[in-house]
Image 1: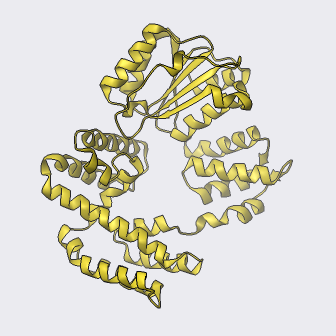
Image 2: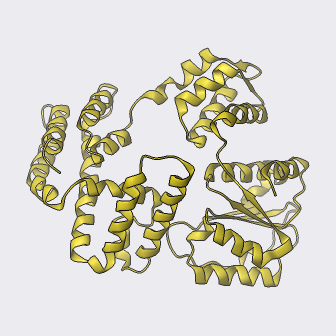
Image 3: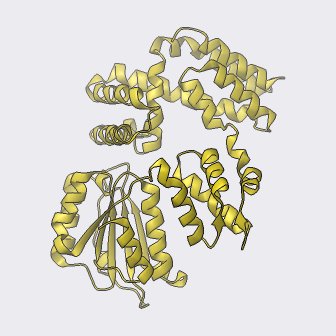
Amino acid sequence: MDLATFEKQISAGKLSQPVYIFAGPEDFLKERAFQKILDRLVPEADQTENVFRMDCSGKATDLSEHEIFSFSFNPSPRFFFFQHINSVNAGSRKKFIGQISQSGVPANTYLIFTTSDAKVAGEISTAFKQQSEKIDFWRPFENQLPAWVKKEAAELGGKISSDATELLIDLTGSNLAILYQELKKLVIANPKKTIEKNLVKEAVRYLRQDSVFDFLESFGNRKLKDALRTIEILVNSGEASQKIWFLLCRQLREFRLLHELIIDRPDLFSEIESSLQQYAKIATKSDFRSNQEKKSLVARIQNTAETMPPALASSLGFNNPVKIKHLHMALNFSYSSLVKVWPKLIETDLKFKSGVPDPKTALQNFVCDFLSKPA
């Protein structure tokens, strides 16, 4: 089923099948579609009792069909939203899907599975056969994005001009979640008004500023000038140097730990190192093929992590896909360089804890000394 047909069903308030597979790479659009379903079909007063969410990402998950075959005390439909079902180990996933498909989905109940894995989407479709529909969610192409923004504005009860749309897209970048969030704020703040360019310029300009995470990314990618510039901007805008230092220390501890585990346990971490090396080569690319490959590499690392002791997996945050996406930057530093900097890191940390007179300069000096030396 195509997305346009599915949205018509939502608007009509009548879904044709009890099982839906939200496939494709764009998670925000899947979440947005689910929210539209709830807004249309489940009164807010009934949502606490009738809506069940499970984020399956990050680890092997034991699923139970018990809740599905329970009941509610209101006539509204019940929805079960299983996010990233492909992250569940194959045995548990197939057992769960097999039990539900054989028992049959209860009346007035809907199951929605999200997955970026085409094979898993096919697995669910095969199990539920004619009872299921698959919808692919893709980010609109660049030339389609303005139309998407205007459509979303209309659904929110507002209107936005073409110039304002172009500026909003330019300011927020390619992240649909951020784009929608800022659009929603604009519509709420300007009821019954057409959102013009000046309103966008006024309300969304802060997105051009750098964040602590931009600094950590610049540091991790060994971009000295960008890292120093971001520190200057952050501190001048009121961010505490101590907070930036704390996050930098945590990042460096994770980088060193990864290198030590690669050395100490090559039987467990050689494959993860190889996956991170592949990820590093495409980390800055955002085309469809690269995005799919990055998701595949993250899933591979998580699957490998499932075979190792839980303490090792959790120490590097392998249960967190976002954490994995940043660990590749550890490979921009050699183990020897991380060991050599440790006395300086401890010394600087003690200065921060004892009240260093000029924390910004201390932070910048550490960053400059470290990144100006060979990796």
